[in-house]
Image 1 (cartoon, rainbow over the protein chains, first blue to last red):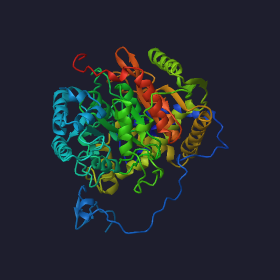
Image 2: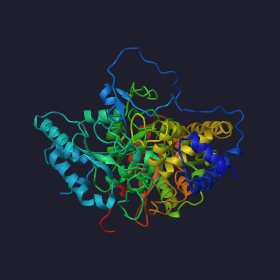
Image 3: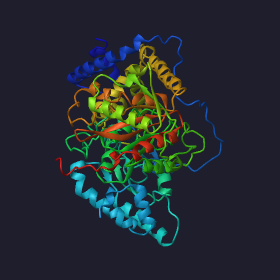
Image 4: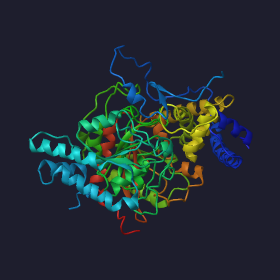
Length: 96
Length: 488
């Protein structure tokens, strides 16, 4: 196995997802199969190859620093699960 | 009169000559939606009322003798990951089931300026992850050529709507084949333009370095007309290409004399349907008879493209989908603390495939594995791009099948993610390289449409159109209409 149930449980935490034990087992099997398929990449020598994150030869696209109309606050908040006094509201994140 | 069966350019003539009105046309298409939607299930949201208002405005312009755009008054559909102000945009995800965008995508602004009529928001695989619409959080769309089959995906609703007469044209998005494969499965023309040719502003992101919006239409002429409207630079998309957009209808030329075609042997994979292979070879013979030249070429890194894609796309998705956390939009499930709230929200409302790709992407980016998986995949992406660069030194277009088979049955691959991924083997390299490609109908196997993929170098959409148009004008494959009532 390339990946264990413990690895998958750790990735789940990093992904902010939670699963039952049986789901973790299913995911472990499926991810292992996909990662096994990905091992074909190890057949290639890529030591001197530049990585390509993006196909366009674009870098640091800038525009003039001019104020333009932006989304009104009420619209920006219109899909919020919870809001108060013009802010997004979330559960308490600090003690005390 | 079955107006819903015509192409956009035919209907434009009927509107301009006042043979029919835009309202009559829209009502005709809406009636068709009513008649077949229960069987096909193309739409997540229907917008019949605003469609009729848009059509009335076009009729007023025609009455006043004003010139109208080629798509004015012509009913279309939008994939439900393209933001529409005031109209729900769900990405077929339960987490966005109630999301109403406060702004329009740039392509939607362009379509509004062109006075198009929008019939609704089309079903898709959740967040565009999949090739069948079976990953939709709401329901599966059926293929109008055989209701037991998938329409393809992820833009399956967009394709099925056009094939079933529930829209005359549509927009999809293509990250690894999501326009071309459903177009192939539904007997339509589907183009993924060059990366950066169409603004992605307002397209809900899946894998940002691969995503591109494009048209699904009934013929190549309509494809050119939709491209004319949606292409162009946009300051709101920093990856938008800033070059002039040609008039793509000028490339509707029935002539391929001297065109150099490359046939990459690596695309004829094991597991390919022999009928598909026969149809592609016949198409090549036909293009050669029409004056094109062809040679076999080699693109040696093709077999690695799929593996690289299924690391890179999930990696990008895992970061893009971090925003669905129950804070600023979308659903929320309350928890003991904020991390618990994130976990409960995401676990309850994301579907299995989305979770799988978030997990895979997070793993590929996590400490200790990033070099082995993500970085290596980025390097392989360079090699795949170089294969295309080298090929285009000697040929004008590359021709391949769009998919190894015709549309498969609903449920057939639902429990085997890897088998589903293998359907994308011919389309994925194109996204990795950022080049444009189109799928056009090139025959049938057991009454199901087969798709031919034509690939060209960056910004050579006109070469695609000329090649596709020549093939189309010398064949009748695009003239058939899906028989959804009869095969049921």
